Image (cartoon, rainbow, N blue to C red; front, side, top):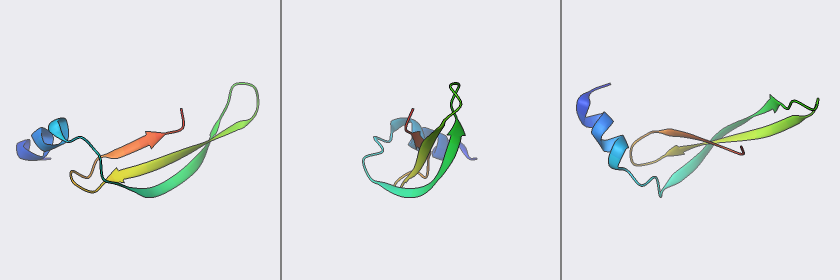
Length: 51
């Protein structure tokens, strides 16, 4: 990754996101939690939600 891309990601507000994928994560009590992943349209950073 080049330096301008790193700086762009640091100062991006991630206001424009698109749904990318989701997966099931194990939960300590024996269940599962669905984690959703979005991708910023401006800088390309993947953001994990559902914590």
